[in-house]
Length: 353
Ligand code: ATP
Ligand code: MG
Image: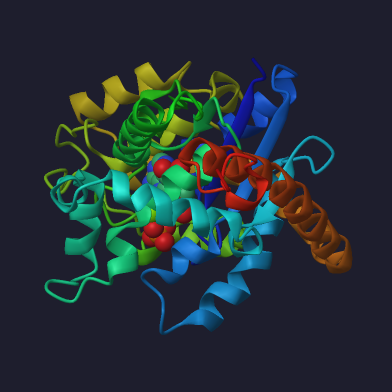
């Protein structure tokens, strides 16, 4: 069986460091492993419209932003098809058929959707499309016969939902769809990077992000303003590292070499944490170090993004090519799906009988 990757992001803003450690970095690693036969990376504009129906301009403008962020992080258009979701209308058709395989109460139970509904203050005015986006995501994954879906932890309920749809479809209509597996980042602190405000998740919609394209001074300002341990009032006080975003970011980004380079007083993160926990280490010093680490990680990404910004027509061509390849693949799957459901009337010699 071919090994196929499908993954993507909503074009609701530029991508942030949470995307990077939670999913992008893993994708680049998988891309370069040479183990995958096909890789599809989707800019999920149709999904972004489910909670931005009144702001299509925002979605439109962020398509190029997301594409640039991908290329900046090392997604290679020679190895991956980068495509725009709405340019593959087969996905919408699949969604419509899958909707009949899921109950309303099942969608209501999805913990990520529940949390997002709360976060967006939808209350009683939840758009039906938003409510159903896990089903459309199942269409995205299965259309490409994806075996592997590298995403952040918040996507786990979506993959579960997708697997249920696959099993249901295959049991009703016969073995047709491929069962996907989720790949989470191996570093636990990357599973769900918190925001600079200390909120549980860095998210475009919450405005608590460090963006991959933020300039050096912006990153510094954001790091220096970060939420830390609220009980660590004086330098002498013992500090807490668990749940402290500054240390979670260090867990996600810091390598031992950075101590040698920027802070040789400590050998590694464990030593630094021990000092903070003992007391006698101020937040400003730790934040200054975190800033240096982040700058070192982000500088090459920022530079590559600037290069691609000079070549927008090339980026446009990459998206167009990618969308064409994606559509061809999705059309094949849709044909199989319709054949399995026996709604392929004009291709079915038995139909007239
Ligand atoms: P929005 O607020 O518009 O939903 P988002 O910041 O949640 O934006 P998505 O486009 O929904 O970003 O997510 C894209 C991918 O990035 C998903 O695989 C998701 O799991 C991952 N991801 C997003 N935010 C984080 C985070 N803070 N930590 C780890 N992974 C993340
Ligand atoms: Mg999201």
